[in-house]
Length: 57
Image (cartoon, rainbow, N blue to C red):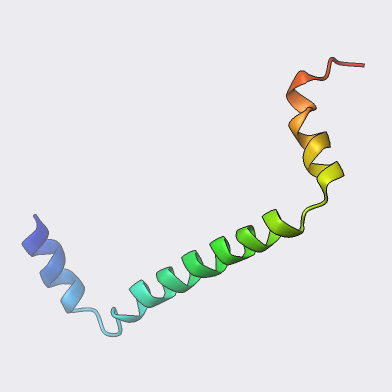
């Protein structure tokens, strides 16, 4: 099965760019997430963490 997929992917022009694009998207997403975690306000984090415990008004 892998030989079929490998042979098929090698026949596509420019297929080497897809892993680089995937890595770039992955890196950018987690960099932005990391930045948001350290810059989020403590009040917002506290409010969001208490949402499951609040009763309906």
